[in-house]
Length: 348
Image 1 (spheres, one colour):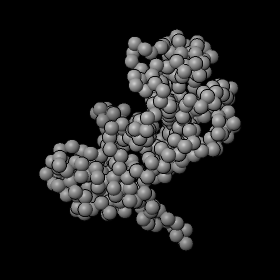
Image 2 (image 1 turned 90 degrees about the horizontal axis):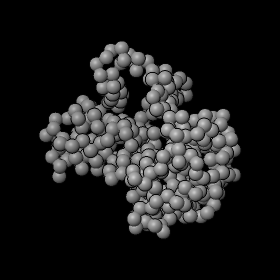
Image 3 (image 1 turned 180 degrees about the vertical axis):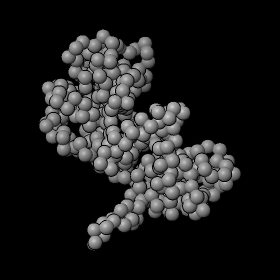
Image 4 (image 1 turned 135 degrees about the vertical axis):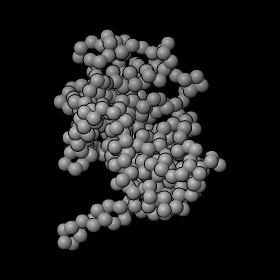
């Protein structure tokens, strides 16, 4: 067993990546794999923060490769052609973004420039894209990640969106490709105008919920064990993380235990708990949870540390960043999103 405190097994706010352990999601990985294997074209949707990227990267992709699928790099459609060299004006940004995403996985010597890709039809590109040695003949899986971006980026570019969906539909009509479209569920209804352009009309869906209580216990316990610590206080921590505000008959709100935990909250709180404990302490008990794992304090502490690190000691930059977060990422008391751009995102 790893000596306690030597390595922090909790990843914090980032997604769990390829090759990293994913605990508490075995049923979801198996269910999504079986749905995709049987239906070929599937929409994976979930609330924000449920862990779609972790499920796909650390769970589904390894399972697909074990099942003899050739899984290509996840596709994004968020690039701006104006930021790419040699791309003619009027190029379909969504199609070009998809091809550039897939090119990034290839060895440098085999990559085509954005200008060359802009002249290609998507179907021709997919058919002639180099395959990994030993994977020719395997069914190809296309993963469209954060696919709501096709709607939110240039929302009025309807013609470009229709052309993109038509091209993807032609590729999937061939039967040679499997496809998983990964979407935040609050955007699902907005895909209605484009559904008829895709085989199966996006009718095959798989919903990923927030992490259940048993899954949260498993994730916390197994990750702690991998880092050399037991976690007898796990039930206490999971209960605290699950707390929700429920409206009472008199209209007031009171906290009560819920049925789910946000995976990012679990990872952030446990990571900070781990870092705060004495390195030679092999047991996470109730006293540790009391001292180091208050949910609000842990999340606020993570936010404060991140802002200070980015500002790098500049108080003006730190104040500007905090104001930006308050205006751009928290809207009406609710988390919002800002599209990441090349030089500035949301004015920052």
